[in-house]
Image 1: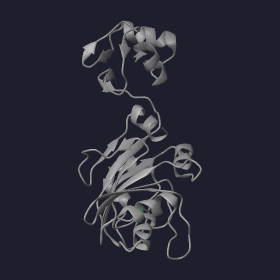
Image 2: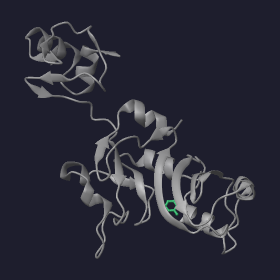
Image 3: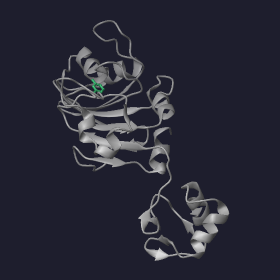
Image 4: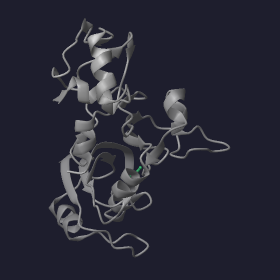
Amino acid sequence: MERLDKFLCDCGAGSRSQVKGILKSGRVTLDGKPIKDGSVKLDPDKNEVCLDGERIEKEGTLVLMLNKPMGYVTATEDATEPTVMELLPAGWRSRVKPIGRLDKQTEGLLLFTDDGDLLHRLISPKKEVPKLYYAKHEGTAGEDDVKAFREGVTLKDGTVCLPAKLEPLGEGESLVTVCEGKYHQVRRMLASRGMPVTYLERRAEGSLVLGDLPRGQVRKLSQTEINLLEK
Ligand code: URA
């Protein structure tokens, strides 16, 4: 929660004394009600502040969550394939870049941001943000596969992966949590154990979950949700 007068200053409405005058003249509403008292508290993620009838917001970091459908490549441009950028509203498209990537055939949680520092922090292997995937695959994962994932799977080309979590869900279905982002990583990890993937969906990054955002839809994250990414 923060004070209305401080929020107005942070949004660039004016200096502290100008904001006092703006409030006094009744030009500010909070959730539709005119407010003259700058000490009133608000939650910028929940309450709507308008100045002269126009909503104002802080120019903070923009982070978008997309529920990616299959068939789109994660690239800002591509000569032949549809890109994930085409799924973003035009006003946001020119501002943001994807955080990491999902394969053309993979669905689910894909994030975008206009904050270069955040982007680099989140894709850095040092940061090891866990990513949770739901996979349908041939065969059924067993205890030996769980152990192999826990110890670090060796891919068919000899690459050794960091320890990962495999949770069998029954016949031909598993959850996989990895902390790195090698090319086709989850597909190659399951294939190396004789379980080629037939469907893959990313469901969470850090403590941030995809939830019920419909496939193909995009939404802006709140500051509270952005904080969850680095937890
Ligand atoms: N692992 C994969 O194999 N594909 C993805 O898109 C993401 C992780």
